[in-house]
Image 1 (cartoon, rainbow, N blue to C red):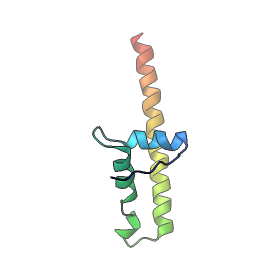
Image 2 (image 1 turned 120 degrees about the vertical axis):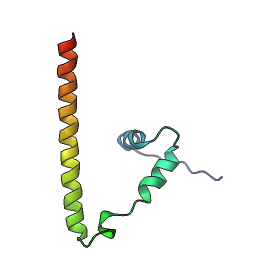
Image 3 (image 1 turned 30 degrees about the horizontal axis):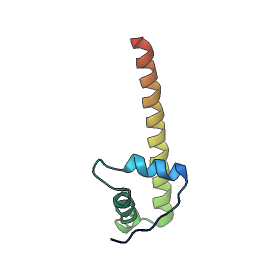
Image 4 (image 1 turned 60 degrees about the horizontal axis):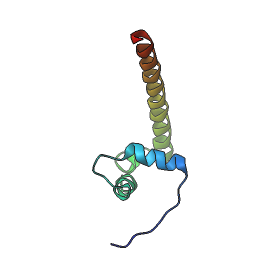
Length: 80
């Protein structure tokens, strides 16, 4: 199997690492993500509408993660 070296930013590496499953290589992660069909291929919505929905979903995901972090800190403080 031929291989290639690719330089990526550390932030991109961390994103890939967070999406990597236990028995998956980084090549597997990249292929899995790159081969996903855009939601617009599955619906009659425009690319712009799909992008807007994806942005909103990402915003909500970030808010949920922040809330989880805040609650984890509160629990940690309460246990001390």
